[in-house]
Length: 532
Image (tube, rainbow, N blue to C red):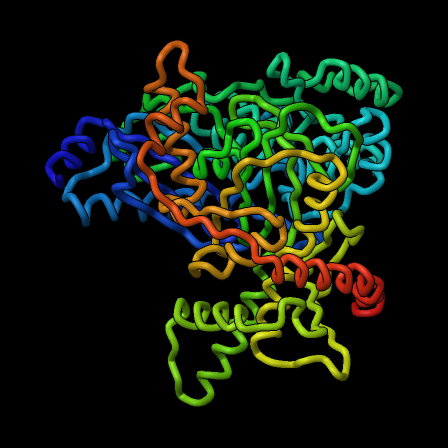
């Protein structure tokens, strides 16, 4: 097996996916059977500068090069082979955000990430104009907010894109985006697999009095669907990715995608009536719908699969950050008594304790809002824990309340989708850090959705593996082969996973918790105003 892998590495019969997550950049190299053969990682963190969540360009390139170096070292250590050729490459990243450039290719303002909630005024105007929900994270919301705020840089823009689009552009010279990622910049018409022409015209008419030297379509990336060619790694790009010069240029590159799209691929959730839940620093669900929703809901985004089908997305800015903070506090406490506990064991023990709790958390309520949360109308967040004096204050209820909190906002959005819009879901896949401890995340998420939740054996590979699969699809697909067929027949055939059905008492308990959660939101909003 090792010789076969070594041959694949030498001959470039591989595919590489690199994904920029919120706290970790991850690279996964796969062989001809799409099995991971090497991995690289690089930890990084966003920063709050001038009240804007951002990463610097230095952060981005140090992160990319550090992640790739980690991958190359893994290949060398495992197979004693240098990484000189790769069959195909794809890049993905956190969706949305705003990176605007001038004619010289210079970044005009610091990168504004998905985490910023500074575009409320823009969304209030664009959503009714388009009769289409425009969330605060979306690139078009950031652009229009900059216009409303009179920012001088807007007139200099010749191109704006997302993080994944920026990386791809610099490595290939191509100003393109995969359609799933593009759908987080501007609304997509799934019939034509491109930006919605009517809405483009509406936006240009809206800003016409400003007399900018551009039309919107001129500064947006070109839209490509999964399987289409998106350029090759240039000589300059190869040096940016691998400053040692070992990696050769000319490697085919697939359309850059967002972490939502790679999550759909990694969980085989691109077919109609399938869905997936990604739970990490942020949390979101994606359900591939049979048709457009009847109504516009600010809690629900309409995006697309990597091959362009409509997807109802509920995206929440906050998930595990507050959970992690509490686990770190318990770790610090243990350290004061000279105990060194493995972090995986600590997480597992605390998470499993939550399964012993009262289904409604016994009167405990937690808010995990490190940042703003548009689904519940908050521009800023304050992590908060409250309880009644007679609440059942136990470790089990405490942990369950924080796990519920990590999922509560997602549940609020999906209750609209499933109970009001009557969207049908045949299967729901879970992936991300929240599901790393077996059973716990699945069981509680099944309660949130009142639907079975499956975690595939490959789910731990995550979006970087999903991106590698998209890169492989571009090279391997037959002329008439669709992405759903490719995934079902070539990638997931014979794959196994675990499925957990909801328990009636958990469903009722989570519903009761969410009612308290919603009624106590007034206190969370007061904390934002009062705690500065």
